[in-house]
Amino acid sequence: MKRYAVIVLLLSLFVVLASCDDLESLTIRSVELDESTIPSDFSEGIDVNDIDIIITYENGSTNTMSLNESMVDPEDFLKLTQAGTHKIPVTILGLTFDINITIDETDLSYYQEYFPEVEDVEFIEIEDQLETVTTIIVGSDSQTETEGAVYVVGKDNEYGFLKLIVAVDVDMTVQFLYYFMVDDDDQSEDKESNLQLYVGTNLENIVTPEDLIAGVTTTMNTVEELLGDVYVTHQAVME
Image (cartoon, rainbow, N blue to C red; front, side, top):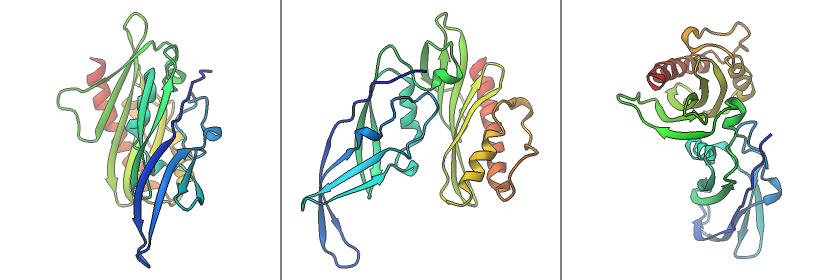
């Protein structure tokens, strides 16, 4: 299990927020992450919900809130596939600030959980890249042989915008599937459970799993459309 050196720097913000009700202003003195809540292991995937943010105001009062998936773009978290110090933008209370996360040079991110032989990762673009595909990361072994790729894909449906992170190996098999943001909050646990049913399936013959939990058909239809786009893209990447 990979371990990571995570360094979180105190971030000072001096901004004024206007109250919609009484037009009074409240000044934020600083925003920082609670280091005790930062995971030391990213190998099981991306889950930011347990990380706390501490907001300190000029009057000395503080407020603690959990980091929410909607505050961070999934493409920024995919920076964790590369060693080094990464600046991750976080948007909270209408403001954007950065956290700095350092990954040891000897470590890769959770990517290696799904492609154990990966030694190097590279962000790429392909000719005629589909609009739904926003990010492509290819992983190679020490002999530069491709082990697989990670894709970020997104599309609107009637409930909002759905964005997926999909890891696929060279044989077109889905190794990891994670939905990062849907505007609506309904049945999120059902969606997560349903998505796991696609892990281990082949992109060439994606079909609706028989064990789908009722009530999320529209979302799963969008998932399958996005997986179809991943299939087309993955074919081009593997060529």
